[in-house]
Length: 121
Length: 139
Image 1 (cartoon, each protein chain N blue to C red):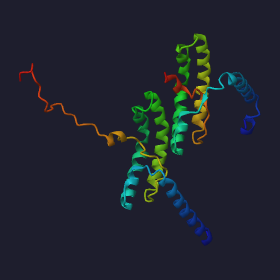
Image 2 (image 1 turned 180 degrees about the vertical axis):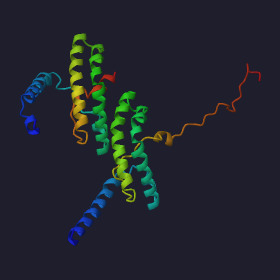
Image 3 (image 1 turned 120 degrees about the vertical axis):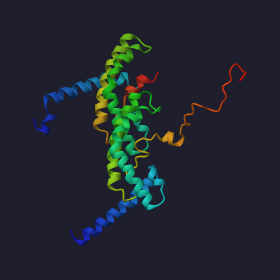
Image 4 (image 1 turned 135 degrees about the horizontal axis):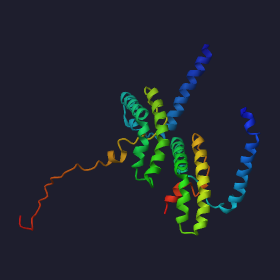
């Protein structure tokens, strides 16, 4: 497939529709929970891009552990499972986006600031 | 390349160097910037470039032991990004060691040896101290 046809393909339209649906459903529920990533506190450009790459790597590798952290937090077990599934998706996808765009110091806020939230107890 | 283009290229390089020296002097964090002489700075920059370009890949393991991170894996992940930047920056430092401009400003760079330990070295191991070992208060 030619590169310019990727964005006009049916699969791309389906993926976009799923993403929009997810955003519409999940957005209002977690509107106040999207926090700036930790690496935004760095002062220099190099500090930001290095920490952004590390942040992406961290969320790709252990983003899925939210699935096990959330049910044991102080909340309803089934709500925890639902949140765990949502966080697993956002952490992993967000990690990929952060790692792929690390030379651009532009933040993509994740729910509760990514997987490091699970260790803040 | 004609003479006019050469002159404009030289002017561009000189002005870029001047701007970089202004920008980087705001941080001036690389250890070799503390040296006063040209020779000291270039040698320091050369060694800094060698260290970071060849050993930058060790950063994840060094950062994993950094207490500022909540877990070792968070530190290790941060070290992955830093290692990539340190190795790339180290190559630039090495290639431009004869120009004593701190660019790119990587701060201390690879944290080996640990900067905190350099500032506050641990006390030497002294298993046989001069403290007397009293036995039941009699000796």
